[in-house]
Image (cartoon, rainbow, N blue to C red; front, side, top):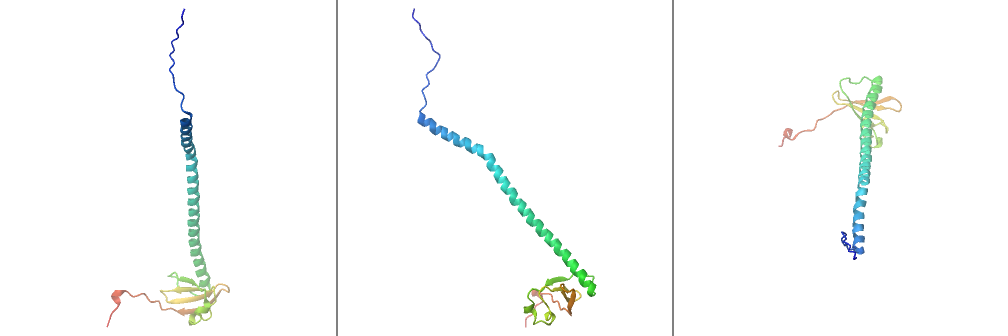
Length: 157
C-alpha cells in the first residue's frame, strides 16, 4: 500500500529579511509619530495657556493702574479742596513736576520742587501748584489756555 498525501498547505516563500527590517523601521516610525501626537498637542495647548494667562495678568494690572490713578486723582483733589476752594464743576488736568530746575525760569514754578503737583482748571483758567510732602499750596495763578487754530481760521496777507 502506497500512501499518498494530499496537502492543502500552500508554499509561502520566506520574506527577504533585508526588506522586512526596513519595512519594520518605517512602520515603527509611523506608529511612534502617532503615539507622540497627543503629547505634542498637550504641550502646545499648555504653552498657549501659559502665554494667554500672562497676557491676562498684564491687562488686569494695567486696568488696576488706571483705576488707582483715578482714585489718586480724586484723593489729590480732595486734599487740595481742604486748603483752597477749587472749581466744583470741572475735573482738573493733573501733572507732576519732574525737573523743577528746568522750570525755574517761569514765575509759576519759581518755588517748585520735584514731586509737586500742578492742577490746571482750564474752564476756570486757574492753576494750582500743590506740594503733597508738606500738604501746602505753593502757588495759585491764572492760566491762559489757548485752543489750537485750524487751517480755516488762518488768514494770509
